[in-house]
Length: 188
Image 1 (tube, rainbow, N blue to C red):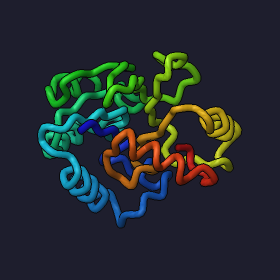
Image 2 (image 1 turned 180 degrees about the vertical axis):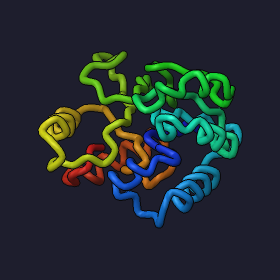
Image 3 (image 1 turned 30 degrees about the vertical axis):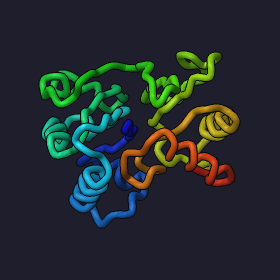
Image 4 (image 1 turned 45 degrees about the vertical axis):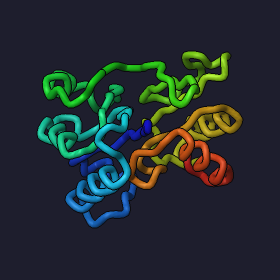
């Protein structure tokens, strides 16, 4: 099975508060992410982590990934740049890159931390899975309104924890989430 997740931000109090994550604090949040991840992901499953794994300068948080099931691949996000050397040295990820094209049950999937307007295989029924935007709503700014509007009829899916119930999700789960939340203000 292939799973996707983004914007975990372990030990990042600013993001925890900014996104109004529904946990009593970072300790409960971290425990819940680990529990939900390991209840769903088996040791031989593949997980694509699409960036922003922890607080910008907290290298200790990288080791949390030792506790998480699955064969993990990493797509670099904007909050990972300061820790990139430590992430590479950890040897916790099979691959590390900024963008990649993978296959998921015969479907071509471009994975990138950022929502982009054109992606690999865009004109050949390719799918985009991204993160970065968290749970930004229409009221957040014009750019997020434009992202949601642009993606309405496109095969592009947000795998950020703020819209996936704080757990890794499959491509089919993201497709269902988008269909179920067409009228919801979240960027899906």
